[in-house]
Every structure is written in C-alpha cells, then in structure tokens.
Amino acid sequence: MAWLAVDDNAHSHPKMIAAGNAAIGLWLRCGAYAAQHLTDGIVPGVIAKMYGSKPQIAKLLAAGLWHEHGHTCPHPKCAQPQPGDFYIHDYLAPYNPSRAEVEQKRDRAAEKKRKQRAAQDAQGNRGGYDDDPRGNREGFDEDSPANPSRDSGGAAGHGGASPGDGSGTRVRGNPSPPRPSHEGGAGRGSAARGGRAALSPIPADWEPSDDDVQAAQLARADGGREQLTAPQIAALTRKFRQRMLDDQVQAAAWGGRWQQWAENERTEPAAGPGGNVVHLPGAMTKSQQQRAGLDRLRERMNGGHSA
Image (cartoon, rainbow, N blue to C red; front, side, top):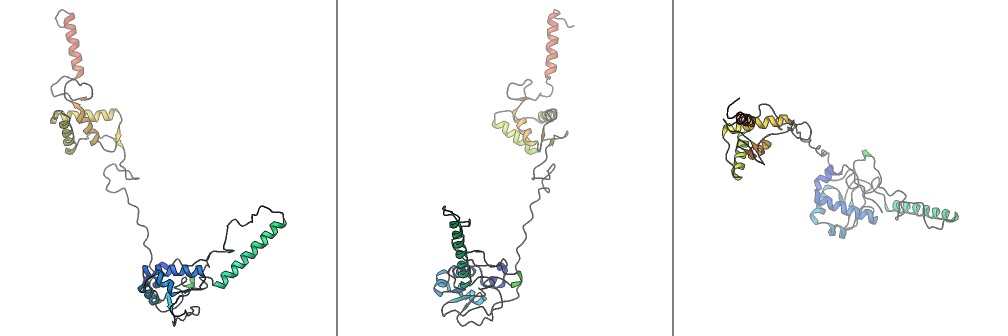
C-alpha cells in the first residue's frame, strides 16, 4: 500500500482556494490513483475524465495544481506528461516516493521476511508464524508517507513555484464559539452551573401572580368546583406559605405548587377527603368548633346550665 501525502495547510493554500472544492475532489482522487499505481505523479487522461469534468480539469490547470503536455513549470521535478495526460505539480520527494523507491522498500521488506522465516525454521518453528504482528501484506518496512519539513512550502500538488502561485493570505479557521453562559437572564435564584434555578425556602411575603390565580380558577371550573373569592385566596395563600415553611420545603418556583394547592382547596368549614380547607371569613376554626362542642357537653352534664 502506498500513500498520498497531503499537507495539513492544504485547506488554506491559495492554489486550493483558487481551484474550489469540486476540482480539489478530482485532485485528491487522481492523486490517490497515482499513489496506488505508482505513476510518479502522472494522471492518465482517461482517468481524469472518468473521475471529473472538463471545467474541473481546467481549474486544476489554471491554479497550477496540474500540468498538461508542454507546460513550462520551473520546478525541476515536474515531469512532462504525454499529450492528453496530466502531471500533479510537485508530486515527488520530499512528498511522495517514486515508483523505484517504493519497489526498493518492498524488496527490502520481503528480504527481511525471508530471513525471519529462515531463522524460525532453523529454530524448529513449525507453527508457520512469523514475528511481524502488523500483517503488512504489501511488504513495507515503513508504510507511512514521507514527512516533509514544515518549511517546505506545502505537499504534493501545491509546493514550489508554478503558474497560479501567489502570496495569498492563509485562511484560518475560526475558533470554537464560546459556550453559552447560564448566569445571565435566568431570573432570581438562578444557579451558576447548568442554568438551573437554585432551590430555596418560600419567602415570607410570597404571593401568587395573576396568571397563577387565573390558572387555578380555570382548573377549579373544569373540576366543577366553585371559584375562590379574594379573601379566600388570601387565606389560602397564608396557609400555603406556612405549610411550606413548616415542612421545610425548598423549590425553585412556587407558582405551580400554589396552583395545585388552590385547585384542590375546599371552602367548607370542615374538609372531606381529597382536599385542603379554607375557612370562610366569620366561620369557626376547628379548635373553636372543638371548644364549642366541649361547652355543649358541659351544659348537658350540668342539666342545661353553663358552668
């Protein structure tokens, strides 16, 4: 297996930008073809036309990424292709190995394997295993691409001087956008992490909003319950705050809890199952009712006379 070297600055090279994405796709496919078939940078015309279009080929030629027969590129390693074929500008060393270099490397790797197998056979290794765990079927000792120096000016296809080269500014990718902050605009009691409001006890002066009251009244109407009057809402809210404080409940918001409480409130002096009690103004509290009952019991025990 051979490799096509592409410099990590290729994305912003002026030639690449001038050619455009579609033509660069053709450049890459044909470069891989040349590496696989060891053409030393020659792209057969039939391959170029099979993989791309005439406008794409023209863009590669105009940008100086490809050369056609008769080109005048000053780079000494840019060979002259046959008429109808193309040459990838600056394809060979230090970027991509030549056919001769690849074949020599394969021969050295094959010879190394032969020696390893011979040594194993001499030691009585009948298992048929060699000591190369990589499974390099192509016979390369080092099958990674050549590593050109950072000051070499690019990788295969766009290094060195050629028509279309320029001193254009490198395109640099924008940095990652900042992560959104959850601290601003979260309202009272918001936590610094995760954008979630902090839990806290109910304020002593907490009151339901108009929307809370309207939602509770609508829910009561849907459930066939009577509407709450303003004094009943005030009494209910006082009781709600006290219960939340007594139970040491902490929450991020209280409107939804209050709506559920108000929806289930019973306005009778004594509540049955499934509801809270809101005593109407002027009605006796439960303790007052108990005291009145005790008074009536004493009267009966005393023959109808108060103690």
